[in-house]
Length: 256
Image (tube, rainbow, N blue to C red; front, side):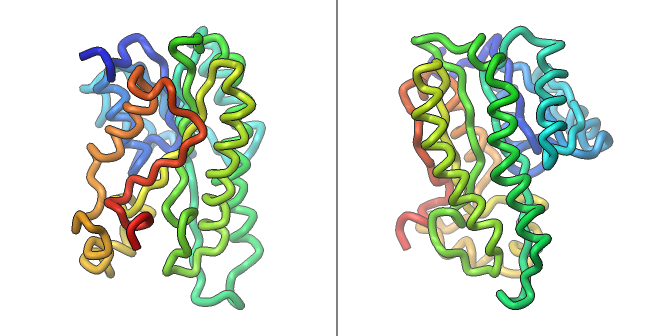
């Protein structure tokens, strides 16, 4: 079936060296795309390339995407290698927890909002010429923002800036979908629940069984769950979907 085939497509996955970003990069590669991954640390990128290269062509371009000038540089470097970009996955993110509201520092707002909310906007803008070059009426270019179910419901942890930034990213997705649809670009968001990742590692170690029990499916997310949704949104199967926020959480946010 070619409904989910991405052969010949070019994708960028930020934060693609670990966790959900790595899962998505692998899925895009297996579907036939050429994938660029980015993270702050060059050595992390090299390790991810070594892990992913058996699935297809993958290139690492390190960048600190909490800064707008680095978002622009990443787009320029990809543009030096490619004439068009079919898929942009804005996955790079950060979280911050504190014992209480009174102890939550102002720096936690700046760090988290800069990376989780501002960077997807700056990246989408920087890559816009390449995305417009790739998009057609029948096969638009795709932007996929990685939000969170913590942006859909009130989270149990004291992660004020994280949940707020993800809720804002979900709405930014809708705003950009309306503006970029006429420019042959779809914009959607994925709202993951609990998946095995560095960000979730400590939480899952402490409360993994309890978290899995909150899902009607009784488990946490697996790599194929995240690979599947990004391939769907990026392929012909998802070409008529835009402005959507798709929870991938085993029903935790939608059935409680």
